Length: 120
Image: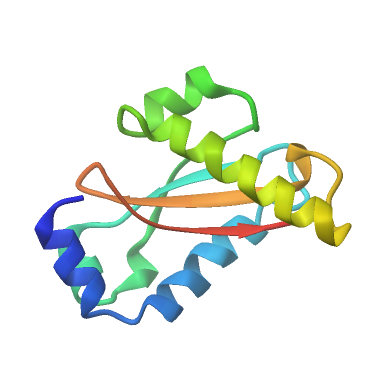
């Protein structure tokens, strides 16, 4: 991650950003999609203007080819890893039974991962 985005993240309200990303994930709960790719401009991120987050697209869990067209190189593997960790944690709690029960939003700025939200 670039120093600029790291510096911005140190100076913004990450709880609010988490809430926004979580709401984007929750919107998919009754759809056929599990992953929502989002973007925000550097200026909007810096100014905590989270209302300007834009939905790029949605994909189903397992549609890695389509997801690879939407996120930077290497991010698909990171997203898969997050799903595996989430499934393990949620299975232990008895909350989900498969990857398809998990919904995740991923936010990018200038083609760099910034934040995400997950729900089930």
